[in-house]
Amino acid sequence: MRTGVERAATRRRTQAERTAAMRTRLLDATVECLVTYGYAGTTTPRIVEIAGVTRGAQVHHFRSKEDLVVAAIEHLAEQRIQAAIRQNGRLLSSPDPVPRVLDFLWESHQGDMFVATIELWVAARTDDVLAREVARVEPMVNSTLVAAIDQLLPNTFSHKRIRNAIFTAMDALRGILVVSFVDRDLDLARRRWDRACVDLGSALADALKAAPSE
Image (cartoon, rainbow, N blue to C red; front, side):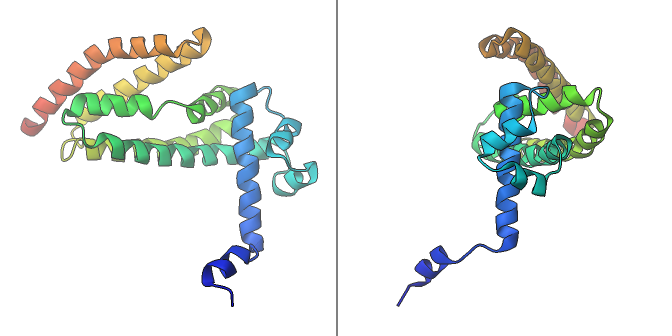
């Protein structure tokens, strides 16, 4: 007699599960294509090749490159949200809230997910459909970042001065990372971020000190 584990292992996936798996496979391939070739070089033949599926399978789930990329925007957002949650758990043990928050911002903007996101941001400048989708999902990502930082700064992040300091730091970091795509030197980007953190950290520390009296 087969055990429950053996029966579960041999159970056929439902149509919904197969559909979800294929969509994820195609969307992961789209993200990989964005990172490797950029938005201009992201084509459906390349996506199909990376995913290891047929052209017919791709068309069945996503009729065009635009459909794939639009779906990939939300797929990327979900991945970035999960990455931020994992990163936040690692930093909670740090005793000093200022470097804790600045390190969280740095780490949450690293890796292929952010590279692919930047490709989509730039492409959205001249593509109204992409622009609408990016504008729709980015608030979800930012809300998760805010919620994560709220855990790093308990009972204080609601203060406007602190929120302003955090968003200023985030804006500065994103600018530094965009420049790093030109000189292609992440070590240099980190040094620029460390330099910026001298002033950004002071502003955040001052905001934290002032928060209780506001």
